[in-house]
Amino acid sequence: MRVTLRYTGLLRLAKGRGEEEILLPEWATLGDALALIAGDTQGYFVLLEMPGERARTIRLEDTGHRLQDGARITLLYRFAGG
Image 1 (spheres, rainbow, N blue to C red):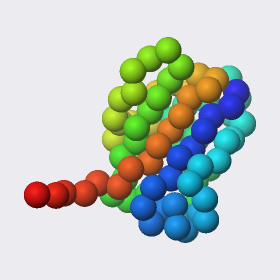
Image 2: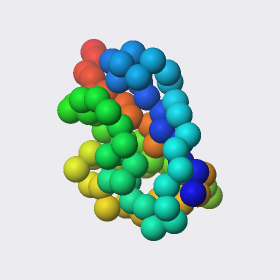
Image 3: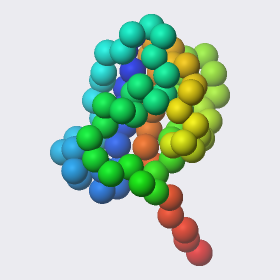
């Protein structure tokens, strides 16, 4: 299946691009996709968008979510404002 990884913040600078498409087996989980990311993801969280579903935020530690073809995974850095 095809999954799109989208990068923000310093991870985007480190990767040299804003997104990439990866190929994963049909049984792949969020953890399988995140394992392919080279770089420090400490402090990030995930916005997971599955076809036909509403987007949801997920902690990086919750890696057991099964993916679907066409899923989009956005890594967002935690920040505070005010």
